[in-house]
Image (spheres, helix red, strand yellow):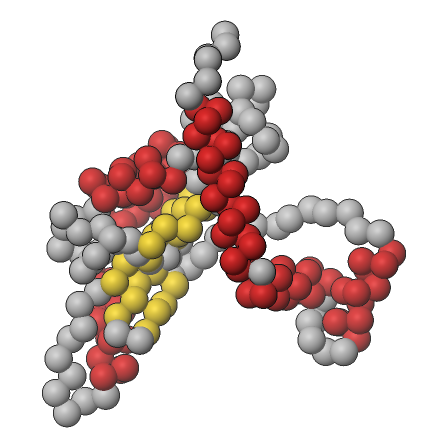
Amino acid sequence: MHGHRFSEAAFGAAFGRGFGPGRGRGPGGRGRPDTAPPVDRAEVAGWFAGRLPDDWFTGPVDLTIDRDEITVVGRLPEPPAGEGDPEAACVGRIERFREETRQERMAIADAAQERYGRSVAWGAECGEVRQLFTNLSVPVMTRLRQPERLVLDTLVDAGVARSRSEALAWAVRLVGQHADEWLSELRDAMASVEEVRGRGPQVG
């Protein structure tokens, strides 16, 4: 059985549907009331490995999970380009995959949202080409003091970003690029805490 790695927003009819019991809405959920609680990555990976067709991808999928969305990216076999351009051949292979699997991916996305309380995005890799289909854009509310606002305003005034929200997104991407190793260690530590908590006694 092959796993899968890629990301498009095949939200399907599930997008906009309320989360199920215990998915983070209402007093039973942890965290913010409009987001789902943390999930076990291994459980999510296993579910997708069992649900995705074996012939879609050449190896395990790449999963990216946050409180709002699960991004699934899978690698496709490279097509023989012949005398054509190899990169263009890979782009065409990804586009064909996206069109031919749309309905089935929407059904899987609906089932995943029902189970995990998150939208599902899709994408594909082929050769050196990686394409993400539609991703969920989530507004993030935050309060910044004047020094932080001045940083954002400087980026806007310098033409780096068109607005404070775009400047904030730029800053987050920059941190992610330069602190990737540290962030990975932090996520691993958090995953260990969740695992230990899950083995603890159940209250109520």
